[in-house]
Image 1 (tube, rainbow over the protein chains, first blue to last red):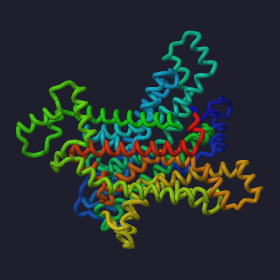
Image 2: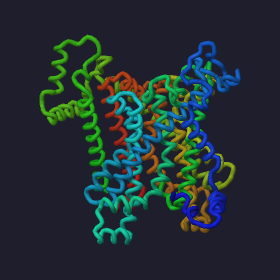
Image 3: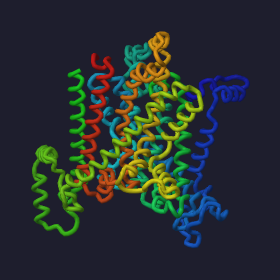
Image 4: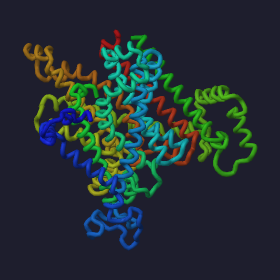
Length: 294
Length: 306
């Protein structure tokens, strides 16, 4: 919504305005295409994948990429199709990263708004916790969680969320501090609007831009963290189609079957690059001031 | 200055205390700690009762916590439930390897990253600048475990230039430390470049030029000195990344450090070992951040005064 402020302008040639906006905003087409492919793969994985990602076929095992058209990117040591596993891997990656980031962003934003608006002791407590969480090595936190709660998709989402919330809290809090100085907030307070309503209806819409920019800049980091945890065997069970797990499976066989690790790693790099470029663009587009304060 | 250091010290101690509390509660919340902490295999009822007594499980929680903290302060993390020897011994055996590797990675990142950032700013928009930017962007987007494996494939298996696993002579350090350094270096190049650009545009640098100082002196002494301030903050922030990277790289290169020890502990649910490695890593991490912050205050007088 806030991305397209000038599109909302009503007029005779609404599509003309849209076209104009597309032309002038210098949209990053390459990252957008990559991310579209990623999302399509994630949503329609069962329709797009040529094979079942878990299908074992001893006759087709260890096929190199290009050896047969049936398996364009080759097969692994069990005869599973690499391309299909990559497509389903996109689904895993998107699912875990977005749930973790969503949870972290939600908790982080709420705490950031409360800390910034309330100030005083509430702010001090929340900020101290955020500082502690912010600097702490994320893999260490994830390992602590997995050590006690066990391996599993829910725990990996929790582990990633625990490592990202503080980044949202810190940034949003800073924004709220400046927003709450504005007249309309004072006015709302004077007219007896409840604190909850002020935070929800008046403060939150003003930090949405920051929230979106920060989210898009964090996605890449979150995907990398999720992949690292999967690689270490702390996420999904072995054999599941996740890019990190695929790289790990190829590690021991790197000399015989280089393609096992190569392709999922390339997939991670491409997606993270696309998210990073897209995030940079969004930041510059929405708020050039943020460029300095990253 | 003194107040600042004391404040940061207190903050570090509080963080460690909170972490110890989290670990303490986690062990107690995830089942029967006595069962959790007993060695695997044949253990008798007496062992179990003894463990319960040692942990003070019949006493209130705060007594248990003080027992736990007392043990920690004496360096007693409990016995590994799998190897049946003190977790502390395993920790101290592995610690030097990790410290060496992390130090090598950080050193490499600093020694290469800062000059690269400075040169990138000086030769703005040149091929060199674009190359450095590309290098940095890729470094931030590639998973370290994958870079490590591809390095093993190319430099270890195909070219046979470097050893692919374990710890030995200096050549064993090259690949692991390059992998650790790359992502940290990426940030240093970007930050070094942008802060150098800002400083090179400032009045005092123009004045130094007008005065006729040698360009080399201006760059590496006057300009870099001020560019160091954000870089120092960054190296403080990148300590977390350093630790993350070290854990992953240790696993890929079979480096006998505490990162691998920790992962083995997590996978085998060897809680005393996990406790020992996590608390020790946190201790090192927090102490190092403290040192960086103090250095930071020393370099930038504005911090000291405020």
